[in-house]
Length: 386
Image (tube, rainbow, N blue to C red; front, side, top):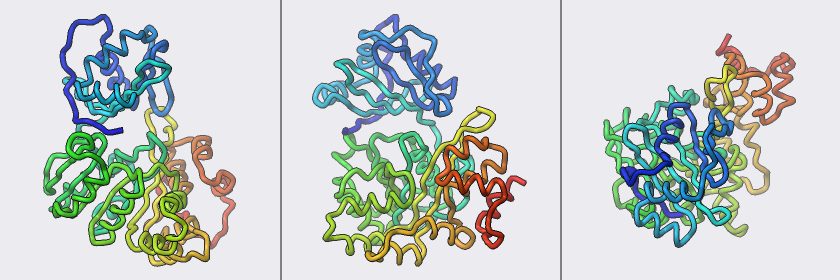
């Protein structure tokens, strides 16, 4: 639904329920998310696992108190109209949060997500080094994909931060809501929030080309109009970043094609093959020592071979093979190669790697050393940690 501007949590009237103390614990314990609903204690997501807090079950008056303390009048009006709303919340001395309030079984429930004050670098996030080169591309569509909570927004923020540190560019973001707040360093960054600074993604995108952008970030591609405008912007010489809730490069390309009617397949394939720059798909894998998670990343670069494959309506997509063929020359990598890197370094367990692998049986054979001697595409992923 439409989002709203970040609000600073007001002091409010005294109450026996202190949701700020819960948020404080959330940050202290390194949780990524907090779930609140009536009848259950507050529940944290720590390293991907849900962990109930040792607190009493939430009452109806507690969720109402959170609404009174964290929502503006506009939030309240939106929630009353559509039974859900997104907003950003700043709590002094504690942190910033992305909040989704929604109704379930007649009562309000909340999902809070921690948003760091400062975007981390590509290196700090342990993203593949090729992500820095992708961020510095002069043009094209860059899609960061993955399931909810896989680190898409964080990775995008790191790429924008890399541009900010290394380019003199005019960057315009369209977000719902704004999560990471970027300060101008070398680039000129304007952040527009849906619901506060613009009505919707599509409208903002229709106007953005008149704002002299070098780089455009669209928080998420949700509809055909947004996708169509993003492709056109990328095809006319702009660097465009966005996200999709898809699991890998093949599914991402198929999802894009599915937005359009079948009779436009040839035209859309040609446009996508020209506009696409790269697809980075993410899966977070728990570390062996239990201290956090590392990103397994599949990276597809739009080489000539990839373009030809996307354009050819007579053949099915053959993206996994093209990634494998482009590993050495172009810096592409599959999920399983990324997992092998982390496993070889001792960061993740064999069981965790196998669980996250695209092809568990092939991964198991690789670990056992059963592979073709002529296949050198895995060498870099097995030698980094040795």
